[in-house]
Length: 574
Length: 63
Image (cartoon, rainbow over all chains, first blue to last red; front, side, top):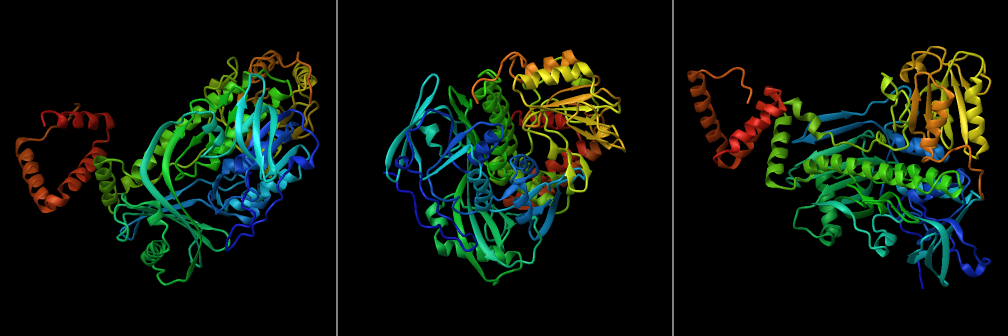
């Protein structure tokens, strides 16, 4: 019998709430479900919310009774905030997180590189914001519990998965014993140690690195701004790297590399932690400042991915699909991009709006993104934890040169998580004018945000449907285009039209943005009226035209729906 | 290798002596680090990644 930990976890800043387990005996017999999601971490919770927004109910199975132990993921990117905004949880993160955009690298007491992440006036969110994962999960959980389409089940652990051709059966253990559940689709969002992945005997591909790191969260009052601090080869930890990040509630993350021959048990021994944290504080000139430990853990750098994220009726997402080095903030920030990329497709397949084959492009888009990340993270990892004598010599040479030669500084800038562009997605329109644009987001890219006014941005208005941005100063969307939009909607596919560039509301548009100064048109490379962008429900661009006609719009929609004619299928079920 | 300008013999002799002296100054513990730093400075001055890779290939010959 599954007996999840029923006492609130210990923390000096976070008040854990223990939820009651979901017990089958308290509920009527269950029909086959549309979607079962395994794992209520940041990615599973988001996936449930995104599916629900698109009208698809889900059961969310979580082995534990409370949110994550320790702060774990603490840095969230702008794109993550834009994705979380889609399910309405950006506000509490903005209100409680610590935004930042500077990173500093130190060697021998000297700042040898300062990274400045650009903050465009058109962006609503900062490049990065720090918040402990417990809060993140709490905000997502609150939204999940408030949503009538999501059946949240705490204390439910999947013990067996049995994939069939047209559904999946899972055995679930609970504090009162097991039950069995059938679902048309199963989403594995059960993290880096995914039980679903192990039970299906799926193998990850890629590399593991030697370096092991301690993560420790301490409460300490340090008079330092919210900026990333990285210390290379300090006297107290020769050859290794230390990172520091400020978190809310007076907490600092100290992240340091272990000597090669040390075990995790040795590293987490209280006297070892104390000696090293004291040494680090002394090095930055704050020796003797009182501090208290909240949580610590050991991790190793890995860069692995499943070669395919779709296995019949089972879809993998987030860390269950890949394990990525956490320097570069690539865990949750990658996972939300995965889940966003997956959820609208799964919703459309479940609702009968697109063929099952549409899911294959989820896998191809995100596996390609994972390999890009592995390649980029490999560069950072080779600098942080040099794998061979040659790499160590080069790294040491760069450290030494950096004291007097600024040209090597950028080598300190490890690449951080970024939104991936699905440039070669099969959902991109082949017959559009993508290549003719000199500016603006191209095929497969997420949209550039545009500041429309005080607390009003373009991305506030996009997503969850196909969005057509139509640039015009005329009074109406052309009749032929309106017919395509109407037919698309009649087929059950959600679609909105945003007119850009007219002072008065444009007939046939759901929203008109005046763009009086032409700034929007300029950033999107629009030269004349009649240009348009088509965005998928995950906001990524799938087509853009210098001059849109009905035939090309129809064709782009068909391609983006995986080849299904968008106007012929009458909505089935949901 | 695209070497547009070549050292004169007297200059080559100067470089020879200066490099030998510097390796001795760096000492056996640090001479490798010194040489890698020097290589990076030279690569930056060369401003040509492919040219530098050709130099690496030439230097790896006949070790």
